[in-house]
Structures are given as structure tokens and as C-alpha cells.
Length: 224
View 1 (cartoon, rainbow, N blue to C red):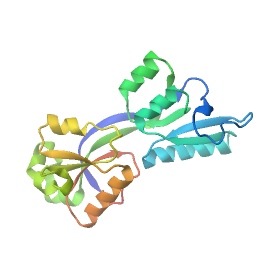
View 2 (cartoon, helix red, strand yellow):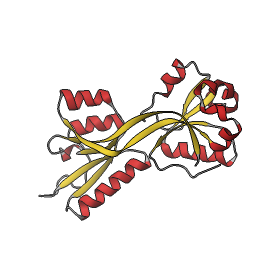
View 3 (spheres, rainbow, N blue to C red):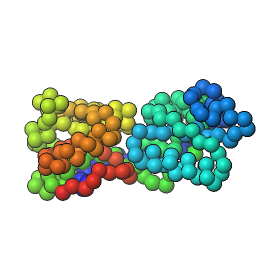
View 4 (cartoon, rainbow, N blue to C red):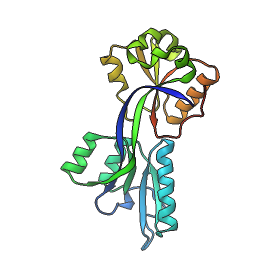
């Protein structure tokens, strides 16, 4: 989908790994009791890009290095706890959790920063191109209130809707809306898949919308 970015923050996507071997008896791993098995447990995040990272790593570990790979789907912050406790061996993609990094990497030293992934993630607010072409000033956040009425939905309670994905994702949108005194309400779709479905429905009907999104990612289909 073709969108116009309004504002963005950046995050260097990173790999985090636990110190020492994971305690496989503390989770439902099919390989927990395998005698002499070389086993790796990877944390899987709920968005498509992270799932693709894990799928590639799993293939290489199993096919090229002879490991058995177990995957566990965990939300972003609990994944750090699981990694520190040895219930998973690695988080392959993280969008920045400074509090957890200070606690586990700097203070407790139970997690090691495995290095950057080589790409820079961008989180921002987007509107569809068809709306931005008609209203080019919408890409300046100072003009958002001018269009709040057009972005209203039944879920936004009389304010403009800022559509977010899962409440567990890295986002400062509620604080931004409050601090910028915008006439908007953050509405969570619940997941990346649900957010994409709503975006595609808005686009199909050529309705205006304002949404949180991130790149690189498995973006929705292009719409103009």
C-alpha cells in the first residue's frame, strides 16, 4: 500500500541472546528431553517481519548446522524475561526496550547484545496517498486536527482515530497525542493482521485513515 509518512522515530534492530544454555524443562519444548540433542529455542514475535527472521534462522540452524529448533511466541517485553530466565535462547529482532536492556544486559548481565541486524527500523504515522494528494498539508502533524473529523470512527469516541496494532508493540502514540494536544484517540486493532485488515478495508472504500506503521515490514498491498 502506498502511504505518506507524517512523523517517524528510528530504532536500530538488534539481536539479543541469553548467557548460558536454556533450561528446556521450563517450557513445552518437544526436544526438552532429547538425549544429546543440540537444541535452540527462538522467541517469535507476532509481526510478519520477525516471523520471517526466525524462519530463516530456523532453516539454517536445522539444515546447515544440525540443530533442533523450537520456537515460542512471546510478546516483546515478556520475551526479555524469558531470555533472562533461560526459557529461550535468542530474540532475533527487537525494536528497542531500554529499560529491559539496562536490567538484563547492563545490570544482571544475563543477556548479551548479539549486534545489529544491519537495517534501521522506522516507526511513524501514515495516511493513504489518495488522501495526501487531495490534502497535502496533512503530512504536517500541526495540521492533523484540521482533519480529525474525517478520521473519526465509531471506536474513537468523537475524536480522530489513530490506528495502532497490538498494545504490546513499541509505541509512544498515546503520549504523543496527549503532549501535542491533538484531537485524536489511539485505537488498537489488536494485532498486525487485524491492523492490516482494517487498513485494506479503508483503502478499498477510499476512506481517509491515520495509522501507526513501521518499516521495513511486510506491508499491506499498495493502494492509491
